[in-house]
Length: 150
Picture 1: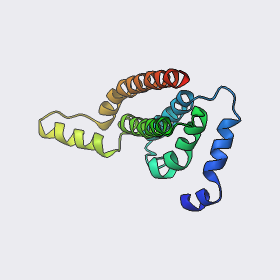
Picture 2: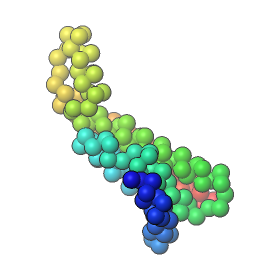
Picture 3: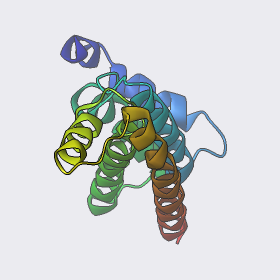
Picture 4: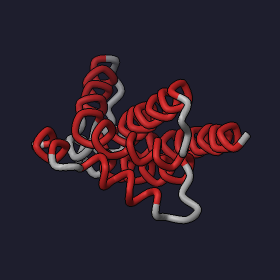
């Protein structure tokens, strides 16, 4: 499906959309995507976005358009930052959902050690980590924006 949409101009439309927005920067775009990715992962919707279905056809071309650079190295760095943003959003957001494999694995391991916890108790402790990951990567994106402006 993504291939059909790409063949009919999905990436070009994404680039056009971002190019028309004033104040759109790579950092702002990717910070918004990070927030969306973490929230959807926290709700258990881990398959709703990802590299193949969202980053490569939509997010990366939009970020490249926001960078407005003709340098191929810079464009590759922007694409890499888009991929990293997706990874961070999913990795730190999914542990908030109580029925994800990592939470159930931790619950099982802790039970073997004699520590009985409910999945919700483990998920609650993932929230500060997800917030910290958002702030740290948001700061990285802000620094990336500043470097692109120079």
